[in-house]
Length: 75
Image (cartoon, rainbow, N blue to C red; front, side):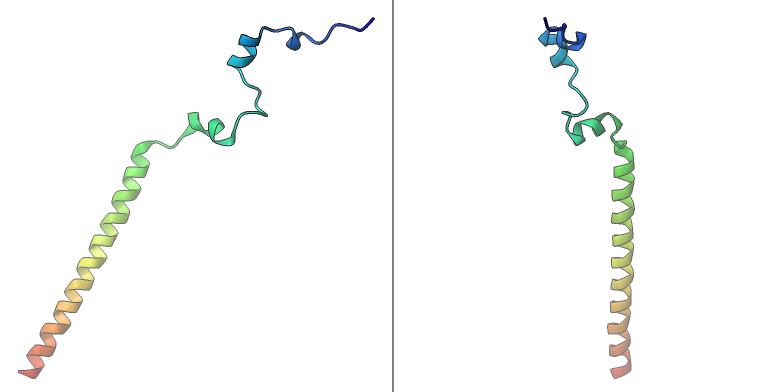
């Protein structure tokens, strides 16, 4: 006569479906409760956009200054 299977196999199917084993859970679902806060993404985007705008502004000033100084030397 065979012994009874372990108790985890005797559970109801609804109890098993509510708590999936960790081996079957995908990687992204494990990381969902610990997602990064949204304000860090917003701060990073603001810093990137601000640095891009500042570099564009400085580049435009340099280009305009070079053009105006060329015209000034020719006249």
